[in-house]
Image (tube, rainbow over all chains, first blue to last red; front, side):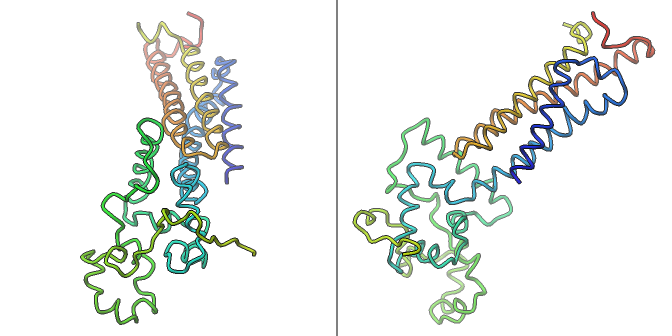
Length: 204
Length: 80
């Protein structure tokens, strides 16, 4: 995908260079069409495909942990302790490992990807313009929503047939009771416990 | 300044230069795996390319106006 896009960009650059060096070539009708393609159609296509590529790339785990403050959160996925939910989901491929962060932290609404991108821009602003936060003090605005868990678990047999879940299904779906902070699944990233913790090494 | 004084060739040169710059910025942003690469693409690359396209579209309007004004006799590429 990225190879095709770069080829398209190079082609656009070559076409645009012709009109930069010799704008008079567009006197011919055929060249007018080429100019329209080279200076309008292809650049718009490059923007659209470039935006798509950047959006896809920003869903990758290695993109998230490329910010310094996110590094411990990335490490916490390797905690060798099944009680930690993110580690358990990541290590057992309950979420795609390459998009592990995005799978649980995406806002699964119609404008979700846009909201996520705006949130990301705010974090970049904090990182480079204001004071970067202490990783341990980072909290999700509005708390972690049950909808992000239920996006996968709702309708899954082992979740639905669990008597504890079925007894409180209404409270869970209406967000009255939190999956994480109600005391049931409260071991999330807990990066304060990372130092000295045993980490899982794949292949060992 | 009237658009006619600028000349079609100048419009095309400016448009091409902006589009080329924007596309170069886009290539850099695609090869640079960093959160800032999106910012570079969205706030520099897209703006440069968008400006280039806008200048090109303005040049089309200018050419059409000039063509209509001279009854199709004048070539907008002729040196001013």
